[in-house]
Length: 367
Ligand SMILES: [Zn+2]
Image (cartoon, rainbow, N blue to C red; front, top):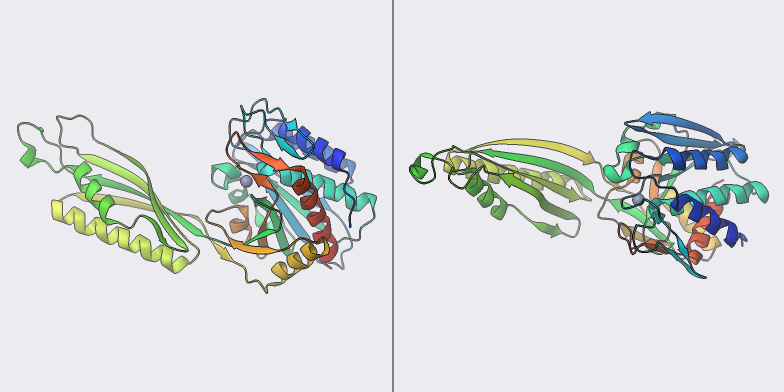
């Protein structure tokens, strides 16, 4: 079912990855994508966001059918200058000096080829929206700066997960950040240490007391940055650290934050230090039930092309988290990329083909 033109798909993919697009510098690749979609009669609008733009593509279809959204991101992690795609019969990788950029250009190649396919083969379809974001790799900055009210779709299919095609991310965590600053009291370290309060010492004790790493199967906590002190002969007046908490379960995330705050309060009180805590929500999590229409439709679309749906939870966030905060029900699908964010990144050509078939099958399945 669905005969995908392998050579054309690989060519599109290679052209995309060979255009450098680090975060906030997506213009060149965006121009390429617009050119390809305009040839197919799609409408393309760019939406300013930070130093770059998000791109919204609309393909009009039968308005009696349910409108659907595909989404991915245009930026890649670095090093991504001078990507030279090495193509064998089965696999595409970089030459080892850069990432490949299949994260997330596999998705873009899949969307271009899927839309070309449905036009060429007159596959019945409804209205299709394709949202391609900028600066996803910097913490979902593109989608956070996009007005989701512009989207008319009911279901969303984000193609931005690694691993074999068939994986469906139906759970992703809530994620919050905390910046903790401990204020002690400076004093000469040799002449009057007893007059000082060492902020590094206080913070160290806090860090050893708070939960760390995997808390339970759906919750994690990590201290990722630490700084403080000015010289060895000064009792450190300030010390700071940044940490993150993630959980599929919002209550659990909030409970861990509370524990951290209580430990900070107790420990600073014990030493006569002060603390300033800044807390921010990075993104909300989501849980899609396996019987939710978006999950059922995806399973059906996969079965049509002989793919086995595998429902999984993910430990990280993606644009899907933000899309799910709108009225659209969205899931994140694997687009076949492997060993992402490394110079060993690669994608199997069969997975690019399956991903394209999956996009076509989704278009046909959602009535
Ligand atoms: Zn990605």
